[in-house]
Amino acid sequence: MVRRKCPVCGNYSFSSVSQEAWNCQKCGCLLTPDLNEEERDGKD
Ligand SMILES: [Zn+2]
Image 1 (cartoon, rainbow, N blue to C red):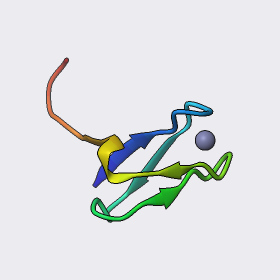
Image 2 (image 1 turned 45 degrees about the vertical axis):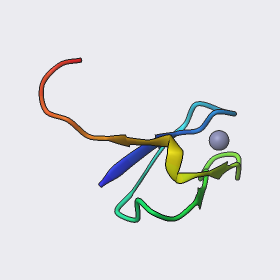
Image 3 (image 1 turned 90 degrees about the vertical axis):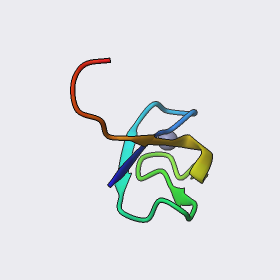
């Protein structure tokens, strides 16, 4: 599971498809794979 933060509206989207672009559920902006944030354990 990867997370991407929309650069336009700041909404987080989640998907198991890490290699393809998705559209933001909120504003429809294209979220490309370079926006992937892997979920990590612990604190940053
Ligand atoms: Zn958005």
